[in-house]
Image (cartoon, rainbow, N blue to C red; front, top):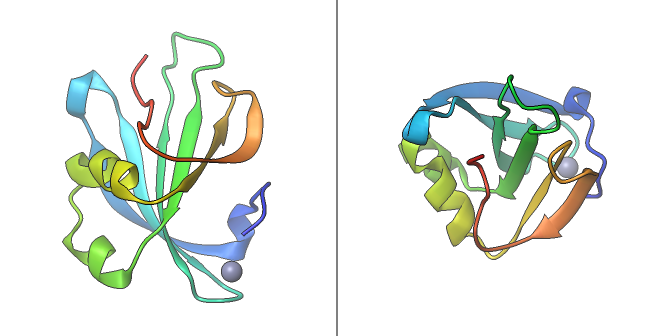
Length: 105
Ligand SMILES: [Zn+2]
């Protein structure tokens, strides 16, 4: 629950690519190996633009992840009370945030 996060601490399951607005957002479900909490993880970067990489991770239920389509991942993150975000775009290895998820350039 405390950033920075180590991908080795999670079992990751790819849920697809969000192609809205021409982006290629990688959507996955992650389960913490220690406590079993499940996270919705979203990562996107724009190769032509340095420091455009960003990720978001929000606590999700198994049911949320089951019914999720990649193109609804951003709306789900925005509907959560809070999420973690980070990456080169934000210049942080992880902070808490809420509301709008800035996935577009
Ligand atoms: Zn955990």
